[in-house]
Amino acid sequence: MMPPTATIEDIKAHQERVEKDKITPDNLPPCSRCSVESEFFKIHAYRERRFLIIIEMLIKAAYCSLVRFICPGCGKTFTHYPDFAIPYKHYTQPSITGFSASYVESENMTYQQAVMVDNSAVGYPESDSTDAPTLAPTTIHRWITTLGQFTQTCRTSLTLLVQENPISSICRDLARLNIPHQKYKTDQRRKQLIGCRQMVIIEDFFQTTFQTSIFTKLATRCAFG
Ligand SMILES: [Zn+2]
Figure 1 (spheres, rainbow, N blue to C red):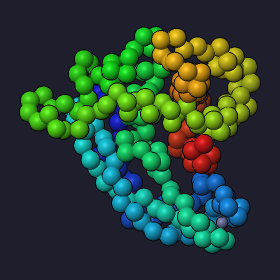
Figure 2 (figure 1 turned 135 degrees about the vertical axis):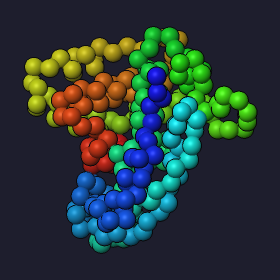
Figure 3 (figure 1 turned 45 degrees about the vertical axis):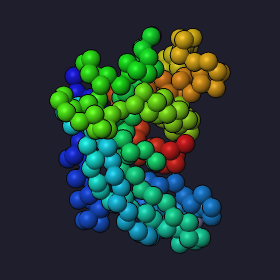
Figure 4 (figure 1 turned 90 degrees about the horizontal axis):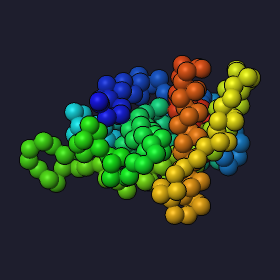
């Protein structure tokens, strides 16, 4: 099995769109400070970002530019994220959602096991260097915290899904979710785990229904909240 990851081609394709001036601010939400609509935003800067992708079980750095827009009303700046990126994360969205999903959807997986694909840890080269980057169990723990907080994105997706498919049982299914006791010590963590698991289910259903990911436009429009 291949570990989930954006590919070097995804990253190159984004770089090409940046260079051809194809990145628009349209999907960004209105300015959070002065409410000017994002279509009026202007390009402010290009910033190189390092991403971590997984190639043949090894973690590799790949670089591309992200576009920063500026609100003409108040000067606040906003970063545009391609669909493989999640703000403040170096790993790509498919890795973040994929590894988190396998943890929250399993009954008794540990974080130690969550970094394994086919019994090997992601990041260890088969032979030599032990200082190569590896995917740490605590990283997955943090990803779940992040994904468990996409409340607005989930709520908006759910509204669209129910409009499209009024007889769906998804709301009932989501309300019924449980997390095994051994996976949390605090109620706050339980809520993050449930939030993450709900996001995973919503994303799955969204893909099937609309043939696109919630990360393509919706998460951006919801300011990754
Ligand atoms: Zn503004």
